[in-house]
Image (tube, rainbow, N blue to C red):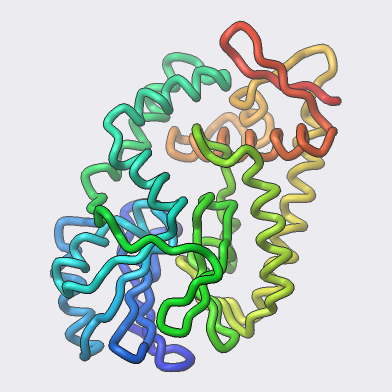
Length: 312
Ligand SMILES: [Zn+2]
């Protein structure tokens, strides 16, 4: 555990897949710690948290979940059982959490969705199988206290940060942004289109980065990697990254040959990805394609049980 600015503690937890770790945070509050995110619900998660909380000392007043991805929400119920503290989570984020992790039919839905976007039958099984890997390690807390952007938790303002996850919420106080996976240092947060996600997640993300630049926090404490000393500068870099990616995406479209998101992901991300990475490559390609469609630079065609794209 590392002590950071303003008495905030950073708890780094193991992640079995890349990038190999995730950061949770302990924020000092009037009534005790606010635990932000919990790591994956690995078999020893509770023991691990017991040690971390013993080392920090004092009581836990609240558990806040930034978004429902396994590395952030996985051990929420463990930390709740350990501390008795209420779990807080965004309204939209909890709805998506239930839709994905509380729904045994989700894998089937994902399978159909990858087929619709052109993944060949021998590949879809692998893609969906990968998404189920974390399922046994997700112990989210049912019926959390639901919160919305603009509300406060012990003096911390909730800031909407859609893009990486539609309902992701960051926390802001005294120029410190608890950034979750909204801005990361060396890693580019994935922004994908998923079944039942908002229609243009990349537009949401670019606008959320505008807001970060406007808020201009002094420092951002991310879910992965190093502390970000110039969050507004990093937000601009991420916008530039996606501007370039959008250009590359539009350049890959062909007038006379409508292509699926899967096909285009092979051109944009290469052919040699493992299924786990291909899943994100397809979702990321689609978020760029939908941005281009909404900007009038590409056209979407839906026929014959598949979705394809051409230049506008
Ligand atoms: Zn994460």
